[in-house]
Length: 293
Ligand code: G3H
Ligand code: ZN
Image 1: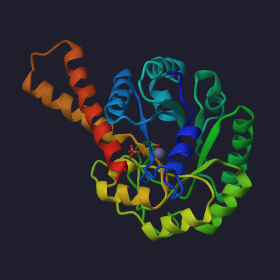
Image 2: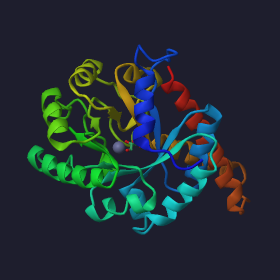
Image 3: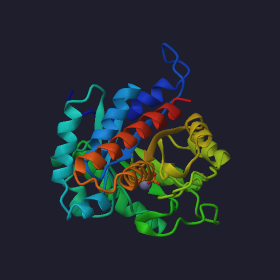
């Protein structure tokens, strides 16, 4: 099927969680997985097909840098794979800071972007995000932004997600969403990027207040470090899109390491890439199941 639109997947999911939806569905969230290689793309789609759920393939600015600054090879591979999928698959450009990259999104098949100016002081974040949102909307793109400090980006050590000022303030967020015009907000509620242990503790009271005061879908980043029960509670509390990256790399690398340790004579890259891809697909299917409660 043709590429789906992230905004529609998120809206449909959010609607399924309302009490007046017919028939009633338990609340869930759209799973959005970061992809780096063709194996990631194939694994995410295979896992989503096994789970029978729509999914978002995310390409981060860092992944584009890894691909020598070229967006199209990964974007075209993702598009071709998505078009053959039996579940809806959308393409999302993630953690974009470069305006040059942002401007490539519509031509490369992306229906949505996450514009990340959260490292800037509030007024500068707002001004940059508003300009990005104006441009994105004129192109028909759905845009997500970030307010607060979700740490652990770009190889920095995970920040103390509980440090004063690190979390998203509900009143500030309300003004930020209204003034920037973004379609969704990534919120800092206790998760941190690139965690290899699932030990993050989320601030569910803050999530409740954010969910009550903002009229847009909320996005959880750094979800690899969030335990299953915390993920379920976050979805119940109003998270509509769950971003997952490191969990796939843990699965892939662990499976490949195990395979190569057991078979040191192996040479054919298909053998170990295959076990890595299979391990990622199982992780995708399992995590989508967790988001269903
Ligand atoms: O935007 C991407 C996600 O926030 C991924 O975070 O690698 O810690 O799961 P993660
Ligand atoms: Zn993120």
